[in-house]
Amino acid sequence: MANQKTSDFDKVLGAWDILVIAFGAMIGWGWVVSTGDWINAGGVLGAALGFVIGGIMIFFVGLTYAELTAAMPQCGGEHVFSHKAMGPIGSFICTWAIVLGYVSVACFEACALPTIITYIYPPFLQGYLYTVAGFDVYASWLIVAVVVALLIMWINIRGVKAAANLQTILTVIIGVCGILLIVASVFTGDSSNLQEHLFNNDIGVVQSVFQVALVTPFFFIGFDVIPQAAEEINVDLKKIGKILILSIVLAVCFYGLVVLAVGYELNHSEILKAMVGNGLVTADAMAKAFHSTIMAKVLIVGGMCGIVTSWNSFLMGGSRAMYSMAESYMIPKTFAKLHPKYKTPVNSLYLIGLLTVLAPFAGRQMLVWIVNAGNFGCCLAYCMVSASFLILRKTQPDMPRPYKVKHYKFIGIMACIMSGFMVACYLIPGTGATLGLQEWLMAGGWVALGVVFFIQSKAKYGEKFGSLIEIISDEDAAALQEPAEELNEKLDLAIEAAIASVLNDKAVKL
Image (cartoon, rainbow, N blue to C red; front, side):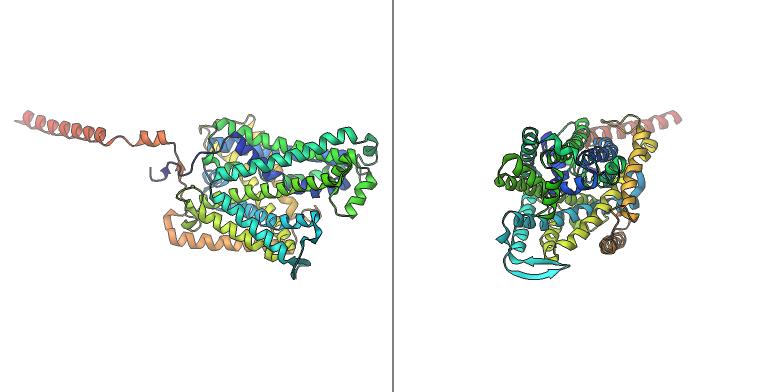
């Protein structure tokens, strides 16, 4: 009983809420700004197939998450999975890595949002202040970034349902913009546009596909936010696993169809021209499909919504991961404090919110380095969760698993290989995702901070360090605590029986 308790969170998230949280986390700004790069790398069909293959890669990891989340629906996700499989040290490494991923993306999006405004309204940049790593910082740019960061932090503090409602509105806007482009391209596009660049002719079909597939898993990071908020989900456990998988499938379809729509609408020379210009190939395709530059700006607004949905989801996920570590006395206990009214991890939200407020002052380029280091952290956590999936099937075969994956050995091994492959991409030179010196410094700084927390918490909390608090239902808690009157009655009967036994023994002896 010492390490068991009922949840302190409110179960307010429905099936739709968790779907838009996960999908919105995965669909950020990339579909607007990076489509031209994907097509140049692999061709239209090559890029689309690359996303399918990348989706399959992440699908295996998603299956392990689906089973573990349904089996252990507890705040912290990776923290709980890895703790039960690898113990407190493995759990610390896994959770601290995923927190880096969440924090880095949230900080990056704080810089991305005002940057996008400059695409829509170039005179927006006013009041030059200074330059960091070649990036000019303006007062107007900083003001927008700071104000929006404070607003999103405030919404998250007000409750996870408020954040989910914001996520729903913005995700619908993203979906509408994407569907408009896809449908319009069917009627206004030309199949002859595809013939010029189905694949990258310079490198061949196979390499075209795999060159894009290599980078696509990083655009699917975000589905793992669902386990972080597991205690706040009011959905059948088996359905949680299915929704997690559905979010990945929808993201694969969205990215693939957007790539095909752009390639169907624009020919090769038009894509190259857009790349040389503002780089927003998807927006140019939207403008051509509707014969209106206004529609290009509408699509950019959809991309801005994608920035906020990722930001919102990762702020939500990062704060819950920190809360779970604090609950296990791995970092200062203050980060486990919940808001008395809204039941949100308020101090964790304050910390991550403060970092998103300060991040824009460092300039956009430094944040690119941070987010690359953060993606490495996410992939490392994926690898450890995949390994935890296999370990728990071996060590705890009787654990209730509402969503039980078939052929678990094949799925688990493939998940480990795929996530390990993503980690290797960051380590091996020449992959296109290799971390540079600045990014290693960012990752090293985060590791150093983790070591400080580890040593300090272990010294301060002693045996409590790394203790896992298991969440039980109210019904189970009631069953474990018998009513006082019933307990007293049983004690009275036991005492009377003991006295009677002693008296009988004496009577026999006499």
